[in-house]
Image 1 (cartoon, helix red, strand yellow):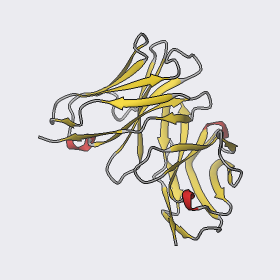
Image 2 (cartoon, helix red, strand yellow; image 1 turned 30 degrees about the horizontal axis):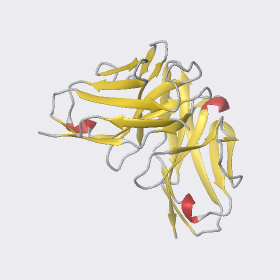
Image 3 (tube, helix red, strand yellow; image 1 turned 30 degrees about the vertical axis):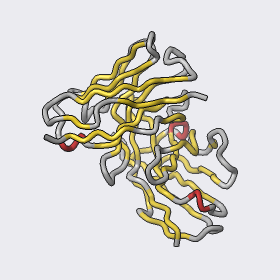
Length: 110
Length: 119
């Protein structure tokens, strides 16, 4: 079973800053199967990035996903107030059919 | 726009079966492009994938829960279901249903429903 480790646990930044979130996999995986989600307090997660770098419908260009192998990252340029919350990475592992989430990075207002 | 809505009891007694329904609207559960998933989030914790269902009836479960989880569907009602047997306090969580698209990401989520396991 592949384990996803996200860092940092908490990131304290100000509006307008750049945020860089990391997601490291315990084994190399296909970029096609890595996604990122954003969850605001009291709400369901929402899809930001799929296929490691492809923005979901309606996601602003300030969100950029990148990486390959075991190291992936989500960069948010010019933080907006609505960007704060918790971010999760997620992978699909086809052997067997299984989804795993990282433990999350909390992005909080400094 | 596709909408998912979870429903079911908010309180389940220990050792009983937790049963939830996800109603799909403005879209078809028989759409061959998608899987239909259940995910949960324990208080203050992260996300845990429980399992997924394809319109054909094929199911896929988290190995850690496989012996207790059953996911099924009713295409006539455009609904799919979660059953989790032998519930314990550790199953207390917000339960989400979601659509999984062909890139294996969950692109539409329900609002979630809170289930507490307690006597």
